[in-house]
Image 1 (cartoon, one colour):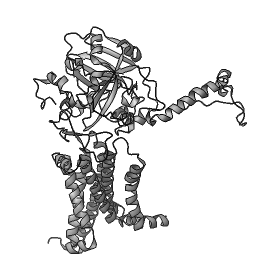
Image 2 (tube, each protein chain N blue to C red; image 1 turned 180 degrees about the horizontal axis):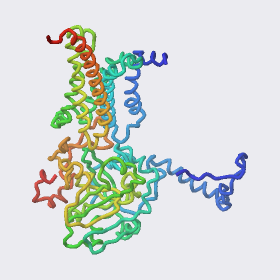
Image 3 (cartoon, rainbow over the protein chains, first blue to last red; image 1 turned 90 degrees about the vertical axis):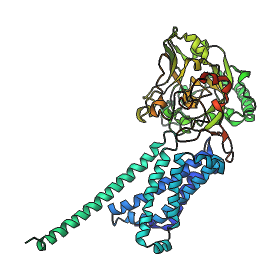
Image 4 (cartoon, helix red, strand yellow; image 1 turned 180 degrees about the vertical axis):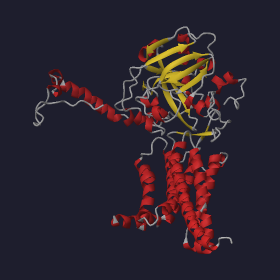
Length: 217
Length: 326
């Protein structure tokens, strides 16, 4: 168990895993010719899916930290929030590049802009880029912890935009988003419920404490 | 189902063989002939491209010169049989090739012609193919509503032949095409929430058009399961989803039939579904298409009105607002 936690907490391990997903699902299939009949489309879809699942993973971490505080596994994985978040952005940018290639260059990209799902994708990705660019200690100091945290809450907006982007992008593709959206929402609801419960419990204790002194005459 | 293994009475002795696995004497005596024939075949097959090896028996057909499609490159057989939208056998395009070939039997298969016609019948598909006469080959453009395209050499016969055989009554205005419903063997039909079976429809004049085709094969071989075996519709001027696969029922009806995709999303998949670069799908452009088999850097090619069959079919929609009747 200790060994497992150590590995999970290892930065190099996390990095290898995050790059490995891309190597496994994009690079190796491309070089072994196992991308099927429409290889570029396959790369396009795979890269987008890696991006959205990676984003989902990082968004699952905050509620897990609240729901399972002081759990060693959660703490270990939490060390990699920055790496996971930045890789979501990198895979998203790769996905965007493949889209441009799929549409046949910048003219094709311009034509594709007439469609709402492309705008949702671009909006979501823009947020991810802004967050990735400010994912360093210097930015946290420059912005101040509070502002930085507020800015990085935009990740939720990005997730909403991108899940919508993904589910309207094809014919009958809504089924994938379902597997991401509902677990994330459940985690958030559980997190918020727990925060409210602890708050009202604390407030309750404080109220009863005050009660003795503040009884009206 | 697991294949039955030859059984022996003395399981522990590896040299004991059941009678059933012993080569019959007649075959044993002809083994050199077998080697000669098989060896020749093997040598010949080495010269052919890999996709053509070890395939089902060829259909006896000949190319109809009117549908040669000069100057257009055919999509390779390997691609046509491995990139399929056949939601009964998986939502991803590489799934049907695998899922539809795990014991789904497309022979024997019977097909029913019914509704408002003088000659209703329920008939075995092979007898039916025999009845409809010689099979011809046509090279058709195929344009999916998802903005990709192929060029496919189909083998089959004009749909008009089938209509003539059925003798529709004057009140018949549409044909409804129904695909198989077999939730026992097809897990998707048990679970994925689509209004199965797959249904589609054409107007009678559309069905009588010379282009409307019933395919029983492609590349000169019987249809593979993933392509809609044993018999399917091919309507090349409409988006691919109109071309119902694995037909079990063809009904002549008075009212426009409800169709599966139209039921699921009426604002996205119209009844007519003619290929039209000027009317976009609400969520994506129909102006251009990706050609399956083209390279990484090929981009897309412009989509043609009625998929390039304007001359043959435009008159069917002369008085119609194609934006409304998409």
